[in-house]
Structures are given as structure tokens and as C-alpha cells.
Length: 607
Figure 1 (cartoon, helix red, strand yellow):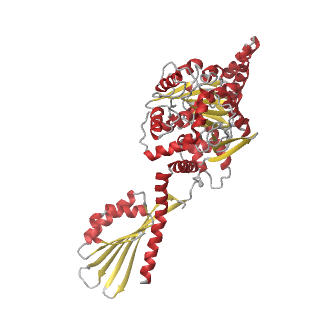
Figure 2 (figure 1 turned 120 degrees about the vertical axis):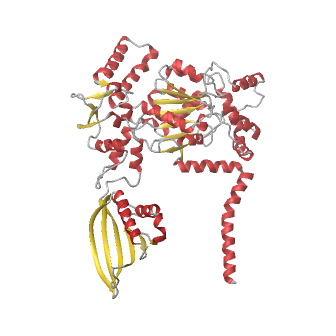
Figure 3 (figure 1 turned 45 degrees about the vertical axis):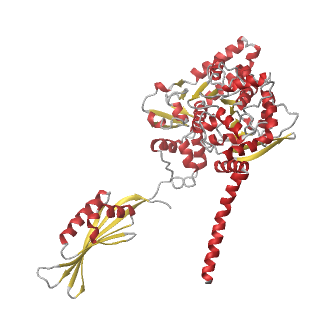
């Protein structure tokens, strides 16, 4: 009876333990959906390795999340759109390489960043605050890549125009701040708002679940099915901030902010990428044409079946496009220096370039094309000889182009000039000794290192320089793939016959065939492929399979033995030795054992 009561108590405790989190989830979903949404963002930040930090400067506090550390590649700063927050980028960050240094900051007054009544929330005012943040976290120690969407795209573009030396490249995603040749559904709303002197509700500032659903339809081409409770939770999260959002909305629609990006496009000197959803109903995709006309060298990527919320609707594609753009801009050290000289000269163009400046520009361009002794990828032929830090390597173009997104892939695809040494070999000023491991990885897609290899950190830096993502991933694993010791796998096959001493002719009383090996796959293959003899199978163990035959099954045993030997040898095993052993266990029986040993080389697998 006592045991039964203990079991009942145990079941009650277990049931309560399971019921509590379930009830908590249900209660949160019904009563506090906004809390559930916050937990959702917290969970994804934690899963993606993003940490939330605060940066204080002169009594003003910025809230941001980050992942990774500054390294050889440029850091990436992301600016979200109107009434959003830093977690907007989570869906896209999921598809970015984990070793990149990424920062997602809450825009001025949004989420965890300080909000004051006297703050200037115009585009120029936000640019000043973002620059303050960049200086506080020392992000501008070297040029970084800037990404902005919607209002954040407007701010990012003006920032790039205002602080060109801090930006190495920029991506604008459906940016605001442009006179769009074509009107959108949202433009019609704006006209109605202006005619009503802004007494009507603003579509981007919902205060009810129905208005939230309308806003999501406006911003997204993809129709998400969102439960009513989640819509209510989204409203509950935003409702306390709606007055602030209305203030910011009026600021960015003001005379100084509404077309700020277009007015500053001509001042942007950094390479620029535009990503736009073709079905955008907030800011029309025709704005991409405006940007392209102002900056003819920019890259434009238009996404089919995508609306204004590009980051939410097409996160994987967006991340891929951004990485392709960044990688395509990477240059060897000489080209980077040339770009720097050109930027220095172009900074003076607003004061009209002098004849000397034109001469300097001509000299720099000539130096870039001729003095570096460059060559374009379409002239390259097999085989390719590389001079890496004084070490010569010969390989094929297909090997170097195995990973198209890598620096070597771009270099030998012809995306930018390469440098040659005096003998005509392609020159790369990097560690030539470590390049052998990089090249072997390109050949086999497997990382093979000596057992006593101690330069993993240096090799990781080389992989980072060459932008080979799979190699970086292998080096970041806790157990790199080292060459493994060669050993032999063994299969023992024995045929044991018990013969009658007194019968004439000699009669077989019983025969047993036994296969013994630690190669589990081989044992499984035998059990699977020799089902015909299942009725004779006596035993199947971890390392052994046995077949037993009676006095009348001698010929079947011989047939099975021949088939087994053939099957074992087809698996790569060869006969190492054979032996025959005779013994008498009983007065009326003789035992004859035939034994075969098969071996094949293999590599030791670590646990």
C-alpha cells in the first residue's frame, strides 16, 4: 500500500512539473502576449549568440546587441526602421557568418536607447546620435559596413555622405528619403493625412489589433497568419510608445528630412548596394532608379514577391546578397591603398578639383592598373602558379574557384586585378607555409593537419583573409580533422565440423559457420544479404554471426561459405592467412576447424 502511495505521489509531482510550464505558457499567451513576445526575442538573441550591451556618452545611453569581435573583415552596423528595434535584424543575422562583428543598435528614442523631450529626431539629428554611438564604441577605428532599412536607410545614406572616411561600404534596404517617381498605397495615406491636417490615424502607428493587421498587410507582401492574441501582444508592446512614434513621424516627414537621402546621394563615395522588394507598398521600388541615376556604379538587387519588410520576408536572400556585395569589394592590399588615395582626392571635389588634383587622380588610376602589373581573370589559364609569400604552388583554376564567395574565387574569376611577380606568377603577400593547408582544403574540402600542429590560430587568420567560410567553420570546431593512424580491420571466418569416428563413410554430425569482426557494418550487411539462410542462423551478437547446419545440410554450408568469402572480399578485405585445426573432444567424435583471417586498412575513428 505504501509503495502504491509513493507511486501516486511521484506521478502527481511529475504531472505538476510538466503542467506548470504549460500553464505558464497558456496564461502568458492569453493574458500577457506582450511578455511572450519579449521572451521570444530574448530566446532568439541567446540562440544566435547576440549579447545586449549599453554605451553611455554624456548622459545619453545607447542600447545595442552585438556578436563577434572586430577582425580583418569590416564590422557591420545595422540601423532599423521607424518604430522598430534592434531585434528586427534577428531573422537576417541568423544567416550571416558567426565570426563577423555585427552591431544592431536601437535608433535614438527607440526601445532601450535614451528618449528625451528635447531630442532632435530629424534625419540629421539621428545621424549625429549614431555618429556619437560609433565613436563611443570605437567602431570607427577602421571603416565599417553600414546597413539601414526604411528610415534607417535614410539615416545610413546621410551618415555615409557626412562621414565618408568611416564607411567602407553601405547597403540600403528599401530606404526612405527619396522623391519616388511612382506613388504607393502609403503615399495615398500620406496625402489624406496632410489634407486632414494629420487628424487621421497613421497607418504605421497602430493602436488596435485590427490596425496592426492592416499595418502588416501594408508592409509585407507575404501574408502571415498571425493569431489575434499575438496581434494584441504586438499592440500592447507598441501602445505606450505611440505618442513618441507620432513625434518622430512628424519629424522625418518635415522639410529637412523627407528627401534627405536624395539630397545627399551625390556626396556618398563608398560603394553602395540597394536592396528593394518589388511589391513594396510603403516606399516605391522606383526609388532604386533614382539611386542608380545618382550613383551609376551602385549595385541594385530587386526581390520578387517581396514587400517593404525585406528583412522579415526574405532574410536568407538578404543576408546572401549583403555578403556577396561585401566579398566582391575585397581587394589585395595594393588595391585597398589605391582606393584610399582616390577617396582622399575626391573629398576635395566640392571645392572644384585643381589641375594638380586631376593629375594626381590620373596617376593613381594609372598606378592601380599598370604599376601593380595586374591581370584580369578571363585571361587566366590552367595550370595556375601562385607565389604565396615566396612559396610556389601550382594548381588548377577550378580548385581556386571552388568557393565562389571566397577571395580566391573572386580573384581568379576576374572580379578584380591580381598581382604578378617578376616571373609572371600570381603573387599573394601572405604566409606561404600555411597556404599548403588552405590549398589542400580547396582541393578536397577536408581539413587535414599534422598531429602536432600548433598554429591553428594563425591558420584561422589565413582562412579569414581568404574568406573561405567552410574552412573557417572547420577551424572553429573543437576537434579539427587531423590525419588519423592507419590500422587494420579484421574479419575472422571459421567453419567447425564435428565428424563421427565410427561411421563409414565419415558422416558430418553438425557444422557451424562463424563470422567474427568489430566492423558492425559488415555484420549488418551479412544479416541483410544472407536472409536465405535465416533458418540456419543460431546466434547474432555484437561482434559475431553464427550459422548452424545439421547432418543433411553439408552442401548448403559449403555454398554459404563460398558466398560469404566472396562478400567479405568485395568489401575490400583480403585473405591474410588460413589454418586447419584437428581435435578430439569426445571418444566418438572428431572436430575439424578451418579458419580464414581477412584484413583491410582503415583509419582510426576518434570518439
